[in-house]
Length: 120
Picture 1 (cartoon, rainbow, N blue to C red):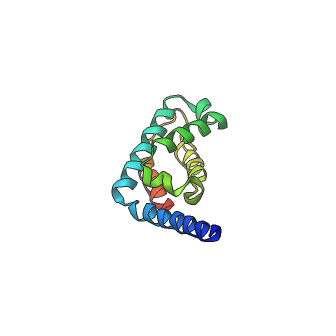
Picture 2 (cartoon, rainbow, N blue to C red):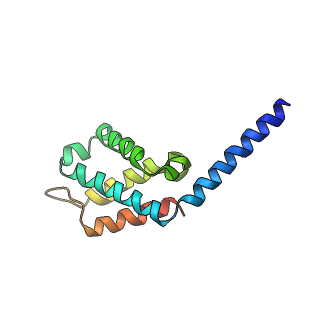
């Protein structure tokens, strides 16, 4: 009886994960991209000292995660390598800036591709 309950719980969890993966469509990915662009643009105004502070950047990653659409959060950070991708974006977006950090249209394209890559 207990084994049957455990099996049902496991099957339900697997089904929920599949449903979440199927619901991550272009609209959800588009919203996630806008959230990340907004977050990175916001920290750009705080300067390199904020961006390069790992603790502050990690806090931004966590806050941004909580703002993402539910279907994405249901997948889990580890499944989509969210933290690693956000650190990759920090290096790609702000690593080339010399005077002041900024998020330009080329950066937005990098962000969009990175978000899409998380779900492929």
